[in-house]
Image 1 (tube, rainbow, N blue to C red):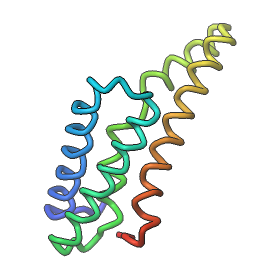
Image 2: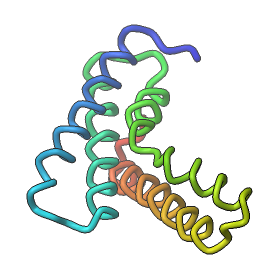
Image 3: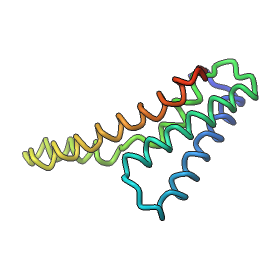
Image 4: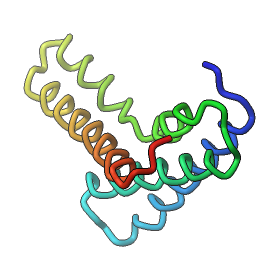
Length: 119
């Protein structure tokens, strides 16, 4: 996709910050959507600032790759399976949950980028 070792290091920094924050917030028993928003914010902050420090040639790749770990893959797949097998209610519920988590990721990334820290 065009990334090099600098983008890789910035992505690792953002992803590590995101996962550390998720684990640290687990005992606080916050709403899962809030944890996703904060984790996406941390992933974007770590990767964008890491790219600035390392002078990445393609800084737009790192935030996307760092936040990719937050994508709710299992609820998306099970929603499709439920809908395909005729379980409309559970499929719609899981699909709505996955869509809400995806919107939370977008919101967390937007909150950091809105401060003017564009990659």
